[in-house]
Length: 186
Length: 186
DNA sequence: CTGTGATGTCATCGATTGATGTCATCATAT
DNA sequence: ATATGATGACATCAATCGATGACATCACAG
Image 1 (cartoon, each protein chain N blue to C red):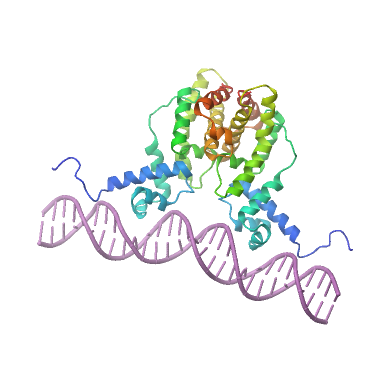
Image 2: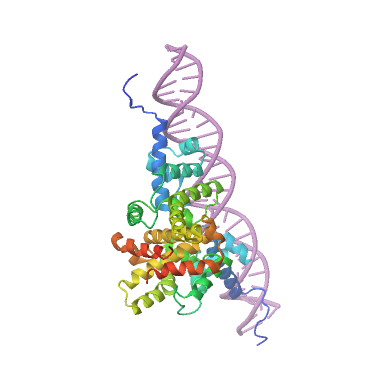
């Protein structure tokens, strides 16, 4: 029983953690396919073979990174201006996030696709659907999905750079615009 | 001077055409990176080496396919219901189209990115920008880009399948929803 | 008929990527 | 101290992909 955290030179938990962090960042920046296991390992300062050991394969690491990324249980919906600002801010500093990419680009691996879909619904669709249901609108789920898709489109386009004013626009200017568009659905 | 189209067994124009068509279809379905030159050649019924001969490389074929895809000069803007329906229909039968993907996912090759960006503006952004300008709104270009990004998000999400009600929704049901969302920007 | 350029076919290269197996090294219990 | 399992480093494999060069074959002009 030495101190609580003896500086072990070999620490699987730490390796796992570093891999998860690096994978989360890279998947957010470049998406699943354009991120290589070697890149992840390099950023994590760890051997690439450890990915197979701890997560089975690249898909396993992706799914683990997805789940590790999840924060609160029930976030506010997209019509909340603060929520919008937070999402745009985060996507600006780090990448767009692997979850959002899933809305627009399907994965080959079915397991990966399912995990990402679950996160997408929990984080974007369900909160909006509940708001629309409370408002007594018809097809609340469809409305919520359209809103989520539209929002993800703007979020990703802002990072892609093909639409230059959008990419350059300040978040303060963007949020009210996006909000009024989404409000058109409710 | 024999007949206008002698049945030549070797016909570079025909090979070019078949490559362009196959490339257009596959790039639309799977995007640039996930489409291999071998796939294109196979669908075109042509040897893959001809891609290099006629278009230099894969990027050259992509750009050529982009330009070949362009139809009319000035299409109606996205607030036109018929235009919306036509775009959703086409994306449903064939893929989402390489141009739209560009709005959301950047390319490595700068030449490719520039060509796609030009098409994107001509087909989606500019018409909307002009409408917003006529309406006397501030920041018409930014509004048009946000609208285009939101629309592309919905279009791609419909094909990706992560949002199931959206993917299953009938076009007739979808168009008014999307239109009202975009109308929130004007 | 023959030469020449155009067109098409085939084999293969070099690079990248995900994955696996082997072995060394460290921590810990006995 | 030593045995044993955990952890990590390294080499390498198999598959894929874009690209290229060499060669075969056809069309057409002379």
